[in-house]
Length: 308
Image 1: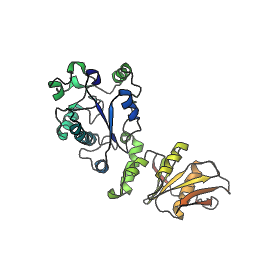
Image 2: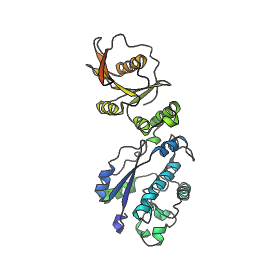
Image 3: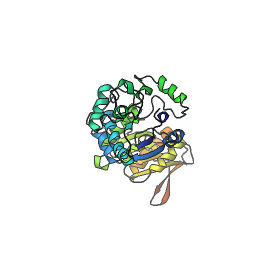
Image 4: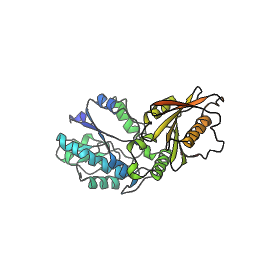
């Protein structure tokens, strides 16, 4: 809509361990715009633990997150000499950050009052500086409101956009299963030791909290098994079936006999029933070690699955 008015647009993607995977570069190519990619960083992890305005229904601190994102966008706006920021928010689409009161609060706390344009709902909101100055024609903006998506999808079709996001897409923090995993991580990992990679891991596999110091993550398919291998290292190690079908297990905790036994028990529980001579393999100190399954499985393994 803004490109249609001859306005130069720069896209900003804020990379986050809690975001759904989206082909942002493909979207930018489709629109023919420049794209900047920035990380949300360690400050975002602190925000997730201690949101000033609280959470939504799950672990989604929507108000804090919107304020934070606009604050991250402001330096790029000033660096590029841009006149304003804009977003695809719709009045009434989300119960916290997109109600009128929430939108007013966000603008106030970013220090960008009057400089954030929401083209899809602009005619329902107070006039912004770019509209007053004539940079943007308010009459060509829209007055969409509510949770429906029909008008947005029709608009995407009109502009020939193939990357229109699904209604439920965007933020994993609104998902109850993912939120349970995040609560579990925060409960068992000190704040100063929590890394973005720990949060990113939550979107892959089934997570089992065996005890306070041990979590085991199982891949649910071949793609997740490969992804778990990418997380190995830095206190995490991979155990894989050797000669039989079953999930890979990423062990987050002590590299000891008890952890190995728990990982094997889970692999067997969720994989094909192994033969006594079947083995698992795992890496240690640059070597690949193998262990036969017979005699390592405890039928009373104390397994708890907080989510996923």
